[in-house]
Length: 76
Image (cartoon, rainbow, N blue to C red):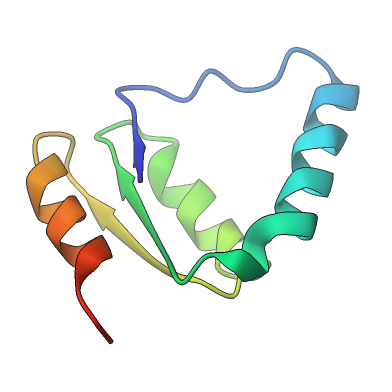
């Protein structure tokens, strides 16, 4: 669950590359990702992530944290 009111971005290009490498090496361990935010950046990041991550991704409004938790725990 990513629960944030904003996405701060990366401090440098090296930090972005490090993040991408981390996602590449770990995304297969995740079945679901809940993005819980009202930030404008959440939507585009979710759409981009769908191309690189095997997990199911679902967006929830910031105040829907409990619904996101329930969705994460649901059996598929």
